[in-house]
Image 1 (cartoon, one colour):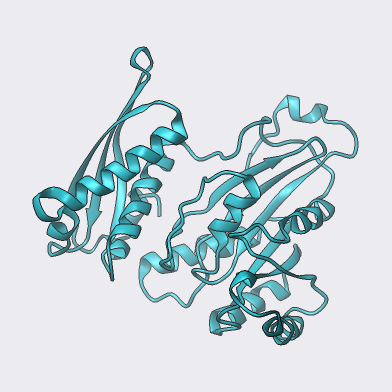
Image 2 (cartoon, one colour; image 1 turned 45 degrees about the vertical axis):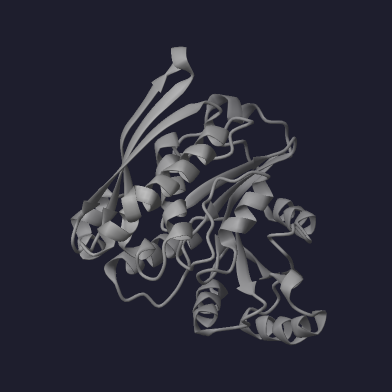
Length: 307
């Protein structure tokens, strides 16, 4: 969150509202999809695999009368490894810093142990919580009423809104409720800014997303991406990016490279195309793979990789 409010922000008209809203839930309930839909563009990576999000992602929605700073958090789950514990710590810290919370529940799977853990945390939260029953496009309406009753018991007196983050169903209602819960305050970010993440961070995340989408089993969970070079060549409308894919097992390296380099080439091509669309320029992307055994359990390695 901004530590200082810009001078221009203090000149907002009376009645302007602003604040921070965390998007929380167990892994793979659609938090990043929801963030992207609320902003009207993609800033958070998405994959069908759980625990794709590792860092807190900031998304900014600005209108004439309000500014909402959304915090997309890693999935809250019962973590055993060091990397997963750090991811959960990021999510839990976010709950202590916000004005509102959107708690996502996957209607296909109902309430699970992790959902109970999230609800227990939210009961004592000072922030206003909206319960969002996500993926309603995938179930019959008859399944919603029992789930709504369960959520009412877990978190009494909270508004429950069935939604489809993927289809955008009921999201205008969610945005209306969010604006109403915000306190009066100035803009924290300039109009037109949709995230405070750096272009280097977004590049690393997009590469990591392609690894999640292209590889199977434990491979994506043992990988991280660092950006070694990010050089803008304005005269050529070109950005040169060199990145390293870190993997914690020697046996994963040939899989990531693929036969005659096919896997690495495909990951690079998909990432380059998305980065060109995002940054509006040509991208030269070069990828390398390095084996860093045990990095997911090494506190120093996790810190260096921003986790």
